[in-house]
Image (cartoon, rainbow, N blue to C red; front, side, top):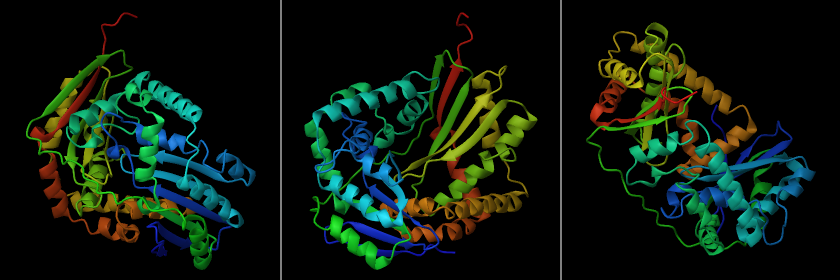
Length: 417
């Protein structure tokens, strides 16, 4: 059943979506700013993620953002992606003004305290070291994205390229970033749950209506040139096992072919019955695990195969076997049945996304920020309209070795024990 919602836009440009559900005593408040790591200066990468942390350090009139939420039993968090920054709160419906008060005050003006900035810089740098520098395969996606994207800012991850980029961020840069991107005309607010439409509009106007709009943002991102040559990199280190990442650039999230790419990734690499797993893990024992995933980004994404070769298999030999399977694959007469099976799985996932209030609210906010929340209700139809001919077409276009990106992590067997 379609998720019902109403729209309202404030004079300062803030978009409000209201999804009513009177079966719950809660309200989910989702605020998405249309800014992510792709909006950063290449010399100051990691800034969007650092700013997400800084947003919890107090605003002009509220010293401790989390304290009022803790007092009413609310749950809140945030994350930064390549395309957006998303803040969300779930709280009792009669406390909705607490959420709107907090979010509007920090949208209006942050405290901008130097001590807080230095603390959060240290927190983010420790996160960078722990996850990306000190773990096996921690730099995997950084290395892979650098290989796939040469001109587009998806070249780096939200954590940033280097620790030095975070170290040199100062308060002046934070203020510029805030007043450029954290403005009502660059944001989407979704209120879902036990709240009336009239109340939602009135309270949003009350708390956000006086915040001035920012300047119009004319965002322009460089397009990736067509890849005409295979890219390959080998990383040797003290690793628990070998690992292969193989990928190709694909369409953006709202291209009509996106749904076919998503189903293709399920056909080849989702679960033990998928084509790659069945042939290369179960029957040939070349790998201990293999899977596919795609990036659902606003701009050109990536179709990726991740594979762990068996202990006694050289990873380059395993990659050759993977290539041989991909480039000579024949769907034969099973595609109709297999395609219906993955469509049914997607249908189950979409239904699960509608069960929890928080998930519904989150998906509405993200989809509105990316394009239009109207697309949220069309998802099932678009997946189920994918044809066998479309799968054949995109697989032939995608699986071309000259446009592939290959990252191999080799366990150094010569390291002393």
